[in-house]
Each structure stands twice: as structure tokens, then as C-alpha cells.
Length: 178
Image (cartoon, rainbow, N blue to C red; front, side):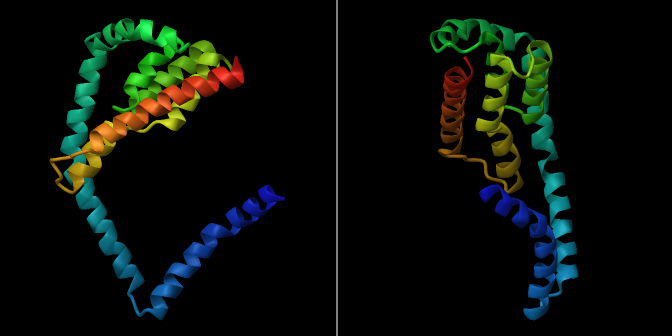
């Protein structure tokens, strides 16, 4: 019943939005097309402004992985991961996920290819991928787009949320799939 209702809503949601927005603009006497193109221009300017932040972050991630620092950190943290029953193979994903969504996707793809999607490693990685955020990416791109240099509590709050997401992913995977 609930699934059928959601499927019906999903079927008509996008056409509804496409019709309602111009109709609402017409009623409010807003030039919808001009507003849309102005927004698109702002989006392009924002994309150009965040390119330096993206390049800097991607280079740092590449250096981190290529230098072998990832392996050193993974080996150093393995006693802790063993305590919480976290597969050691998933630790690079836990480290990479706050840094880069694309890098984390590459690590996860490698895990699923090597261990299988239905393995405890694949399932833990999948849950972890869905329950964490690309914290440094978000800070670099979104705060950089609006020229915020002092992030205050955003970084610690994001990293705490990522840590909770990682621990929760391990716990849920162990409870449901072991």
C-alpha cells in the first residue's frame, strides 16, 4: 500500500513540478525564463570560483594515496579496527570518504570487485558509503564558493558525523550480515 502510493507520487512529481513552477511564476508575474537563465549564469560563475579549491583538494588526495601514506595510516589503525570487528580492507574507504567522493567510490569499487557485493566487506563498504559524507569536499567547495575562510565548528562536526557513520556502518553490517 505505502509502496504503491510512493510509486504514484514519484510518477507524477516531476511533471507536476515542471508545470507548477512556470504557472506560479505567471501568477506572480515573474519572468521565469529570464530568472532561469540568470540562475544558470550564477551557477557557471560559482563553478569557475570553486575550481581552484577542487584542484588543490584533488592534488592533495592524489599525493596522499601515491606517497603510501594511506597504507601507513591503515596499518597503524589496524589494532583499533580489529577491536570493533571492522574488516581491515574497509579502512581505506573510511579514510578516503571524508576527503573525496570520487576517490571513495574508486576504493569501494575495488572492494566490491575483489570481495563481492554480498561479502561482509562489500556490505560494510556499501553501508559506510551511504552513511558518511565527503566532509572536506563539502567544506572546500561550498565554503570556497561563498568565500568563507573560517569554518568554525563545521569541520569538527562533519568529522564527528563521519566517525559515527563509520562506526554505525560496521555495527549494522556485523549485526545484520554476520
